[in-house]
View 1 (tube, rainbow over the protein chains, first blue to last red):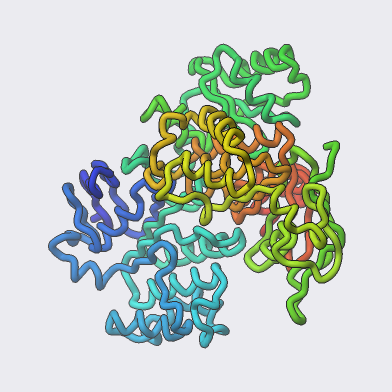
View 2 (view 1 turned 90 degrees about the horizontal axis):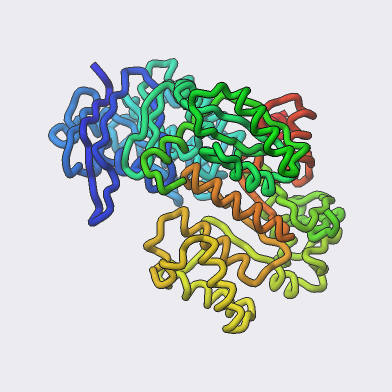
Amino acid sequence: MNAVIVRGLSRSYGEVRALDDVSFDVAPGELFGLVGPDGAGKTTLFRILTTLLLPDSGTAQVLERDVVKDMWEIRRRVGYMPGAFSLYPDLTVVENLEFFASVFGTTVEKGYELIAPVYRQIEPFRDRRSDALSGGMKQKLALSCALVHRPEILFLDEPTTGVDAVSRREFWDQLGALKAGGLTIVVSTPYMDEALRCDRVALFQGGRVLDIDVPTAFGKRYGRPLVAIRSADRYAMLQLARGFPHAYSVYPFGEVLHYTDRRSELPADMVAAELREFLNAGGGENAEVRPIEAGIEDSFMALMNSATPAAA
Amino acid sequence: MTQTTVSASQLTRRFGRFTAVDQITFDVGAGEVFGFLGANGAGKTTAIKMLVGLIAPTEGDAQVAGFDIRREPDRIRASIGYMSQKFSLYSDLTVRENMDLYGGIYGLSRREVQQRATTALDTLGLSSSARDLVGRLPLGWKQKLAFSVALLHEPKVVFLDEPTGGVDPITRRQFWELIYAAAARGTTVFVTTHYMDEAEYCDRISIMVDGKIAALGTPSELKRQFGVSTVDEVFVRLARP
């Protein structure tokens, strides 16, 4: 039986449709990612799954219990780390932890084994007020607080927002360790690179699920030839490449540009050769053009374009 | 890169015994997109505060937009633009009211504001939303608008703090195109960010560790130097040796 079952879930705030007919399942022990920008509906979904908000329509089960009927049981059995780390700023590290343990009728000692890998890193600062912690330490404390009652499933809403690259990486390593211990984890992020750390990912945009799959699978289904262009003058090259008659889309992509061709039947190396010739003729002699595999971000954009053609 | 718009030499700031910024030296050219990176507490914020004339250095010098940070901090503030995710626009003013307000603060004439606002809104495709409240705009539009507002007084240098955090991947790229367009017109774009993904879009990046600049170069140079495939890995190697 799946740990989370969501069917046709919708929720509006006035005229804004925050969630629009969302369905997905999360298997027990899975690390499941919700990837999408701010305003995609991720927080609304978390609030419904943790019984803090009622859906307008559709159903959701968490740990085989209904989020509307069985709200008290679900609350005892899930851990939730909301966005912006809801800690008490004027309580110390250990006081925050004791508070969250006591709310669930347990003690820090009983939950210590589970939180230890995370908590030990901030334990030297146990008597420091939580508002005096760095972003990375706040994040570790918030995770400890969400785990202290030994939940069966963990919901994490943008746990790495505002945290530096080193702390982010440590955090994902810790999630991997918790998953290895059997915990089911649902985590949201606006950052595509973090999707690769998940078992499966749902791409969210405008309250809808665009697609769900294992993170490496999205690129394989891209369906159009994709080419990277490297040039010293990215901006001029961007304009030039957009003038190629078969261009479907051209976007800046880190140090390079990603060019997608309309002709889905052509092999990417043939497209690259034609494009190279076109760019050379147009003054881009030094452009390096090579076929590449699509990644999750390319796929996200392609899905956005096909969902709302005007967005291109 | 003909002209240097940001130049720091041995720039240092101490707070009591703590050295937040420790003798940093670097130059940024006109039209360059420069990424200024570092972990929490590495000294980025202190360095930026000195560069924009908000706090004085303990030692060392810097020039920004042709002015000295010690002697001419007021002139620096008039010659730079700033945009962050947290502070950008007034949500209960309309798009045009925000532009009029910021144009006025930077001493533009009514006519200049009128002309530049019209051009900026045309470029963004936001002309039909000029009378809409900023609070009602989608996040991506707000960020693009905030960037245009930061450029309204045609600053030589614009400072951006995590400019594309939280937006969808298409809007993010539209935003980078605006940045590249501004750079192509000669504006220096100084980007601070936690997200190494954003760093990959910069012409050159510096990475601060414990108050010092631990690495400086193009993203490709740094990746080659450390033998890794992403700036994220470069960062992790430096910050946690």
